[in-house]
Image (cartoon, rainbow, N blue to C red; front, side, top):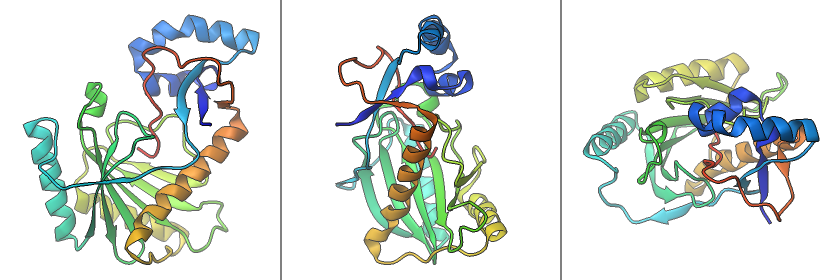
Length: 237
């Protein structure tokens, strides 16, 4: 059974990033009482693993502007010699459920993320994520994540993920920045067969779950429904 995010255990900044400033203000009174009483405020479900459902290719985008942005990003990635692995739907991730998967030799997996049914202006823009797992974790860092997302992730990612946030950066610029961040830690792990593109995303999800458990951000109480109107967890943005 999936666990739920405990909104009362989030920092105020994480709460605002997750639900938006206006919604956070409306929730704050109940959350403040819950913190004083040691009570959980159940939020969205958090699943132990990610699920990637392959989709048939078509013209993507919820608006003409988003369609143009997706087509331009796709073309830019192919120009960088990225290998395209298809388009997928992530049913256990809400708000930004669509993903186009790529690998960039020899060690980087890329995800072009967007929503076909955006719930807010914050989730209406496509963005790119680049991830490389490191050969050596002596520095305490397991992987490097570089993203052009317009918003930060909430809850905060695992301390073992070296995350860098560059909103609206082009794919070529983002890749150059990502490569430089990886070099700070050493070398990346080479990716294997075609299906290996998803392995880093599953592994980073496991790191985040462990970090959230250590922080007490998850509740196992299945009897309480999620707070009405609460957006879902956005991981790795």
